[in-house]
Structure formats: structure tokens, C-alpha cells
Length: 551
Image 1 (cartoon, helix red, strand yellow):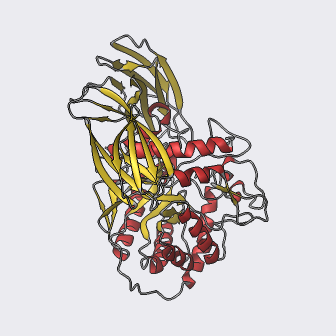
Image 2 (tube, rainbow, N blue to C red):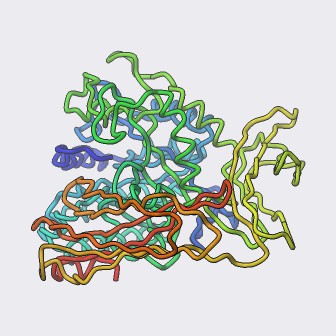
Image 3 (cartoon, rainbow, N blue to C red):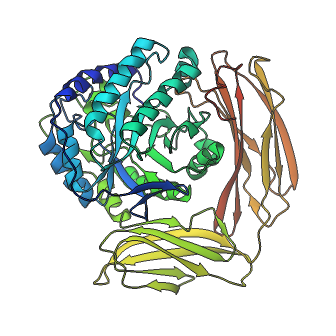
């Protein structure tokens, strides 16, 4: 949620937090507590793998409201919203700041889970002891009631801290605040993961292993999605962190404001939003994400600084539900809501596009309760049938044992008990009876420190001694990490028939850039199978980031 120019407003949320001190006496939970585990890059609830299918939810953001200026608790509104969200096939919500205890009770009663935001302002001075003391007090007040609710499955303690701000206030101070809050939550609410919400375009350099899960906001028109594509730009985030923790994509979406900005930041049609959100889900499932939180349930009129006016700032128009005017507090579902309700019927985490399987394809699917059977079709032939399904997590394998290299478009069909079709989805994979050789793409530079020289030369090498066909260009970029800048994007036209080719280029890095990301990507294909190969390299300015960066 990139609220440009409004970061200071986040400080105002503490007026609301103060009201939380009036939270009711703590409730004793008498029912058996669900067992939450984090293992093998996934969430598990009561021993079963659990895909966190949350939706961004911001109570207090309806027409005329502002979620970060003192507001009244709205349990009845939350109750209605939870019923709608649950009926839409989601199993959780993601918040940016604290729900009151009254509101949290309602979520608990609904059966939905919560990715629970605690709104530590990302533009604060983390090196100021008084600021830190104030934040610890706020977290303690929240935990006094939140720790009694097993609907909370993750705490998000900050949203999108900016690289230049971290550099300014100190990386060690930033990590210190994160660690102190993490440890406090671990003591008070043991077993519940803690993380911040980074952003794949600006905080991919941060070592997220200080936290229990990797969480990022990700928009496909930002950052190195340009070179890698949306799936790979998300997939490499846990790979860069190397410890195999679950990956949550905590924001993604498309604004349908009437006026747009650069790329697709606003100005999109309702039809484009309807088509793109299921595509985003498919990409994130292909990335191996353990959870997805699209942005978001209903429009936030407050973001243009006039809560009673729905102006054309793109941030106000990401909602799956919209409001007809300033008097409408219920809203109306946009086409994207119906598209996602259908898509949620069956979330296929395996197989994945852009993936090679050595002739045995694992099936992993998270099903809604009304899915009673499924089929897999390949080359107009039903190759797999599963009857008597009853929702939840399902796994199996499809074998192509002994068959040679083949691109395979697999059509998944899901039916209810009356054999009415609920959902169709196509996934293209590559299979063979032995491992394939891939083309290689690399980027390198002689510069190890941005303080050494302002101009950064790069070398890009592309080699293809394989059966794959190259597209006719390589995309590359310099990501400067200056505010929300998309960096310097460039293209290299190549000859797809040449086995080995290389090029050099350079870029003058602005002095205010704290870190530069070098990213390169190219598309290859075999029949219908298309894959993006890529490489990446980070260069830091001096040693300011040593305590916070990926090593």
C-alpha cells in the first residue's frame, strides 16, 4: 500500500491504539486450540498444510472515515464483512493496524484467520530511545488482549520501510527495534510467527531471517518484475534469504481509478482487474507462495486526504468492492470479486508453470468444500480422475514414466456433487525422463562498493547450448532504491540463433542511492512451455547495511 506523501499519517494511528486500553477483561478460551506450525516453507494447522488465502481488510476506511485517525470500534460492520469474505472463499484477512478486541472477537467467531497488523510507523526514528519505548508500550497494550485469540496466525509489525530511511536512522537501530518487538510477541503469544511487510521492489536486499516468515508486498509493474516476471520476482525472495521459511505475498492488485500513472498504476478497467487478479494468484502459486493477500477488500477513500471524496488517486481504487457515493457504507461487488470467488474453489500449488518435472508431477491442491471431483485433461484425453473429494488439502502424483521431453498443457477441471463445473485452469509444464540442460544468463560488475565509483559497468552473458528457443531480447535494469523509483530499465536486442553472446553497459548511480540491484532476464521456450531465466546482483554503498542486508 504505497501511500506516497502520507507516511506521516501513520503516526496518528496511536490515537486509536490509546483507545484500545479500554479493552474488556481477558476471555478464557475453553475450546481446543488449533495447533499452528511453521515447517518446510508452509503453514500447518492441526497437522494439515494450510494455504493462507487472506484478503487485505481495513476497517474504518469507508467513505468519510480515516483508519489512522481515532475511530470507533465497529464489531457489527466487521461481522457483516467477515460473512461476505468467507462466502467469497477466503480463509483469512490481512490488516495493516490493530483490530480492537471487540472486532477481533468477531473475526474469531467467524472462523477466519488473521494476519494481524500492528502499525509501527515505518518513517519513525528507530534510533530514538523514547520512540522505541513508545512502540514497545503500544505492542504490550495490543498483546494484552490479542494473545488470547488463536485466530491470529501471524503478526505484521511494520509495512514497507524505505531503504533511504533505514540508512538515515541506522540499520542496526532498525533491526534492534524489530528484534525487540519480535521477542516480546514470542514471549507473550508463543508459537505465532512475527514479520514485517517488506516490498519486493525496495526491500529485497533486507535479510528477513530475523523473522519467522518472509512477507512482501508485490506489484508486477514495480521493481525487477520487469526482468524476471511476476512469478520469478517473488520466487527468488525466499531463495535469496536461503532458510526456506514460508513466503507470504501480503499485497498485490490492480487499481481501477479513472486516471492512471506510470505503467498500470491506476487507470485500469474493471475487466482488466477481473482478468488480472486470478493471473496474479496463478503467478504467486507458481512462485511457491504459502499465502496470498490481495489488495484489497473495499476501496479506501481516505488515501487522497479527503475521506468524503472518491478522487482519482490510484491508491483509492484497488477494492474488490466499491461504493456508489459518500452515503454508501455497504458497497457493491466488482467483477473481480466474482472472478476470485470462482478462482478460490481450487488453488493449485502444484504443478506450477515454468517448471520441469522428471516425469512425475506432484499434485497439491487446496479445495473448497463444494468441490466433489476433479479431472486432468492432456491432449484432449482425460488422464486423471479423482472422485469423492470433500474439500481441504489434497495431494497425489501424475506419472509420465519413460516418456521423452515434452511440453504439456494440463487442463484441471473441478466439479460439484451434481457434476456442475466449478472451475477450469490451464498449467503448462515440461517433462522428460532425465534432467534438461538450461540456457544460462549472468550479470556481473567489477564494482563491489558504490563509494568506490559512481559509474557502474556491467557485463551480461547469454549462452544457449540446449533445445530451447531464445526470444529476441534481454531485459536488464538498475534498481536504485530511491523512494519508489522504478530504476533504469533497458533492453538488449539479441540474435536468438547465436550460441554465446555478451554485452557491456554502464550506469551512473545517483549519490543518494543506498543500494543498487542489477537484474537481468530473458524468455526461453520449448513448444508451449515458456520460462524466464534470470540473474541478479546487489551492490551496497559503504557498510551502512551490514547489519540488515542479505549476505
